[in-house]
Image 1 (cartoon, helix red, strand yellow):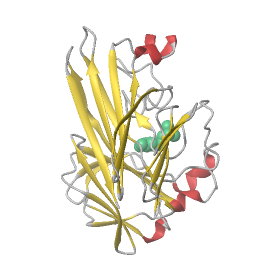
Image 2 (cartoon, rainbow, N blue to C red):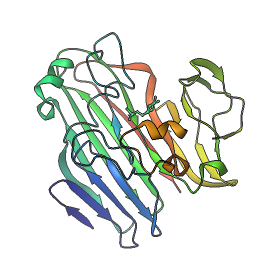
Image 3 (cartoon, rainbow, N blue to C red):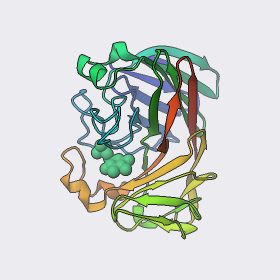
Length: 282
Ligand code: BG6
């Protein structure tokens, strides 16, 4: 099924799986399978377009984090994709086992300030595809102008987990990462990485599937196409300093596994197209 409301779209399958996406940031805010919510959404998240949504799947484009120099230096942290109202392009496919909806964003959807801060002519098409036991998100970036631009893109996915203390993350061993907590760089040694304190790491060029396990059992398997990097983030007790994070101990029920292209810039020449996607399998 497909329901379009003034500020959101809801997709569902005859077998009960569903997904809900706000036009604000084209942010997926809910993914339900077997009656269970699979994404974490802060109970204090602003859903009124006043700020990016704290939870679900905010979109990061054209910069990851905050640049201090270069063409994205004037943009807010994580860019503008999660701040703007996207256009609903419609449902592009529907069967009994999968349904897809597409959203579009271009300079015409940006405020005058943002257009000035990043003066490129671009077109984004964001697709969300719900299947019985997976959720796929895909971004297509097109340079529709005459100037080459550089970009980062990332799906800032907040996965809901039963208890962060029982988690291990697998698939990162041997990968180089930058740790934003200790401001250091290292190569991951853990085959089974526990999450027992604040974590904010950018793993570059992750070779394969990243699995989130709860007590040794895989609960999410994240695969990527053209998205070479994976960010692992949990604010831990620092969550209490975020005005839009709740409940205060909600960090125990989430882990961000963010598939992206962020460790280096991707360059897009005029009239070129780039596409990247990630699929979360249960
Ligand atoms: C992560 C970054 O992807 O996003 C963190 O690596 C950052 O450094 C986090 O704190 C949340 O960012 P924001 O802008 O949504 O508070």
